[in-house]
Image 1 (tube, one colour):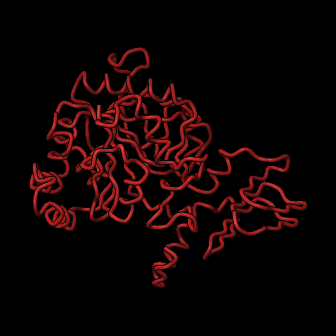
Image 2: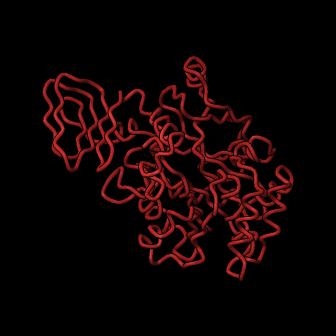
Image 3: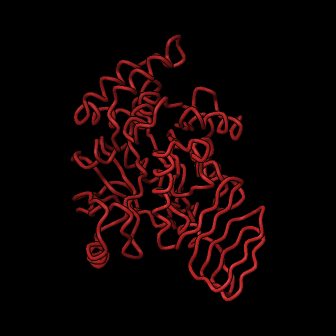
Length: 356
């Protein structure tokens, strides 16, 4: 199998720590290692360095090469423009198909947190087996533990016999992020799963689906075939990306295809999508606070503070996020941490490039 790690996101919800040149997957948000390093570490035992692909953007590529000198140079695929997950996966599928179109591909976002690594690896192995038994598209569904409104959902279909002891299910439908009432109904129904954004299929299977559902993208991939590493590659890649639609793999393929299957992922998954996720994943003190850096907290509860350089003093506050960097300070309610991306949008609109 090839492991394709998508590492091109910007992580705008983690501003001010996450910036264009060093986004959240290149930060030690959870633990001592970067999130990307943790993703590679739990994937390597399944495939080895010769089967790891990392897809990223140009500004981030130098840092990734520093982190992973063992990674063969041609296995860091650098996108000239960020065009969402479908082109990213298409570029990786082209790379794999040129080597062996029947090779399985495991698509993994770079910024997830996994609690039970052994079970995660076993689930991926079962998914690879299922993907190689037929021309199917496998996705991993996470059993929901609360009515989350920030995730898309997968509606479980009928069981499929293949796939070994873990079981493989059909997929009845994909659902957009619901409101609170709808999320509560989905949770109670017991047949809806969080969409993890992790996928498993052969290169041939996904290329066929691109040809069927996104013919314009497929034609651009054909134009790039066997050009990687050749003179003019970067120019050809940029020209293709300028023409390619900005579209997710869910919209492009998964919501349309009739050969989608699902395995359950019961390995303790979190997409680390905001500072609130960091708070939930971290060890807290008796007052429910999580601090990185010098903090004095008086009569304060449920706060997250990241301030390695400056003393932060909290007095009589609850449920705040406080994040300090050399050039910026963020203060917001924990419950609104998903909205931090709006600050980045404001900075972009004002042309504040130094803060992006």
